[in-house]
Image 1: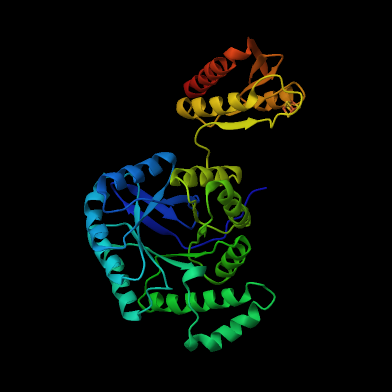
Image 2 (image 1 turned 90 degrees about the vertical axis):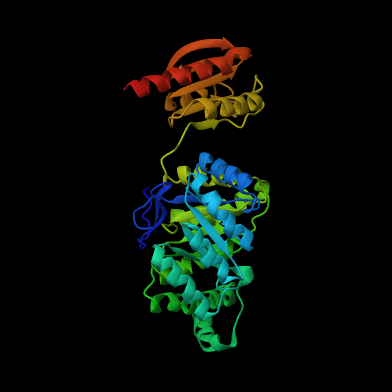
Length: 378
Ligand code: SF4
């Protein structure tokens, strides 16, 4: 079933050299990640950004806690392949310095940059250069303030059925107050995020934001943990939101190599039909007591080889036996189903070879390459 995406305003991030990524409107859902190293270590920072870009990240964010980080941006930016966002907390001056260095977008946290005059200075700098700003509300960093008590009581009534009602009331009140500063300045190049480590809260928060504001939404589950557990913690709420049409750009956050964030975010978008797949669509059986080859090793080898050598989104099936093998083989471009230490290979549903187990990997790769070459030749 096609997903009907919620219509949002569109913002543009980037420049002529790195390319412009559109967020919101009818733009495809983009994938973001963040470097894990220090921005002031220029060579390592550039290498990490470009590794993320090669993995498929459309936009990369970097931390700029100190002046040496914003100063380093001048050397980082000319060497990267994708637009860069400066992640600013506590010191609005870092945002001004990052803009001066030529960064493509600013992220501000309303929980720790609250002075209206400071925010207006950042808005003016971004406006002058045509840069968008993300307002990133995190559950852990927003603080209830006495001057919003009346609005909080009203919103408390609106969210009274939710176990997260108190947070939702604070968050919406905070966003309304913060957005007013931008609107007063006639600034609308905004994206919004409302992250939490609690998947249920993430769903409710983004639904609440989506219902009230038409700015593009940057989805994320913050502090999701290592990939082993963080993948499900992230994909459950983000997949739910995206399937219901909410979300314009995504960052999955792991306490692991950020390349994994990009790979998993892309796979999530492919599965939802929200992005065109890059590379092989691999399906494989989970194995069972009927298995007669070492399928786990074979699948990992096939995945690694095909990722290196096949660029078109061809569908490859690796099946353990004849129970589901022929059916999957018919639905795949290239398939193997194994049995009795041998593999039977299919291309577009037609049997092409039977080979011993030791030759399955090479033959499957050969057939995949031949198939890709035929597709490319038209
Ligand atoms: Fe078991 Fe065969 Fe199904 Fe694989 S394809 S899970 S080996 S029945």
